[in-house]
Image 1: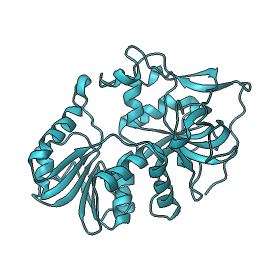
Image 2: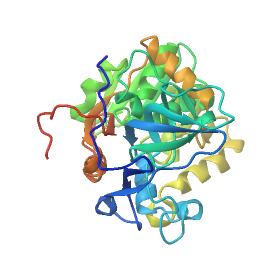
Image 3: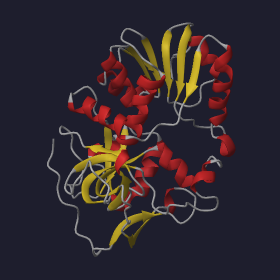
Length: 349
């Protein structure tokens, strides 16, 4: 575990901060660094000095405003919240009058508003004490994808020891956590990834690895008790064929499918079919709550789960972080940080 260093000095005063701002929907070029007001907090909120902020595909959807139904909740013509980012780790700067679980100086992880910034406001109910055993920057990638994976495996997949579990997209943000959580339960885990990422998936505890470029993991009928699909593009009939007659498919998010549905149609069809077949086909919207976060932190502190952080990007290079994620090259997670640290090989200025 490395020592947390102080954030870089800035030109901001006690009421302002540096933040990534997006004035309209679009690609990474719309993410620009500006000086803005620090967020105000409500009675049940916490102001966090952000140390790490995870970059994930959900933030990418909010950046582009695609698929279009996304805009119903986040702004029709432009983002309702100008500063993107949800995942965070950091140090409590101030607490609301009704906050009881945290005090100034606590190290926390969780979900806030506009975490691609020096400060973020977060509801107390969406925070947990940060893992003791983990670098605080890397803890910034825990909350969103880690909690989603936990819910996919334990709550919705209902994975038990001895079951055969297939994880599609095993080298991605959710997938790297799902492999570890299923392995910790005692399942026989098969992880699917591309050639250059198979070693990572095996290191995380997968009993078997499959290169989707050379082998179809869904080709064998009735092979798996549970399939966790984080890839977002396999047909339901193919998923069902690979399941046992009473097996479970958990669809986590969706990719592809165009600008209107973005893959959501597959989730709707799964829920429509499920009541009429012996298999359970399910999807979910992840809960953002302290209970799951605390369970995840316990898994980290007991050594059963670790975040896989491929690269750290400084705050002013958040657009580059998003481009890197979109390229598909990332092994695990990408994190934005404002902590001063030595330049790494391969980093651009």
